[in-house]
Image (cartoon, rainbow, N blue to C red; front, side, top):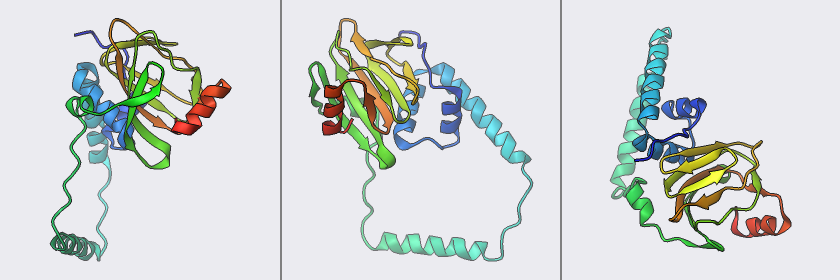
Length: 210
């Protein structure tokens, strides 16, 4: 397999280890970790450091009502469970689940589907781009994490292939373009709308909620 060259930033990995990433971003990082031994090692180190810091914190005595509050919550959860059968959990997002998603036309050479539409403008989107197709020049109102699942694309920061992650923020303006002999499949976690430079892409972005 191709050697992964582009990884999530250290702050992003630390936030993932602490459970502070949004669901969409956490999904992208988790799938990258499945492919990247380097980042898995960094995650283990971050978790070990976090555990050591917690062990150094002074103990705090529990309040007099702490046990009673915990028992009330357990009783409430039991009562909710008796009201009906539990709702089955959504299947975890794996590469196989993503491959089975139905993609719809977005633009010439581009197909997509929204995998997760979260709160605060967070979207997890699967994108399939034909080789030689470039997305319009744009920026971001928030952060974006892009994981290449198959194929490749080029961007201002270099070339990205399977397993690579592109991480951008509000200061980045770019125009990714798929390259190579096969379609490029990417998983994107975005916060906030894109900021297109040209008028037509800007109008189109408003229509399709990009």
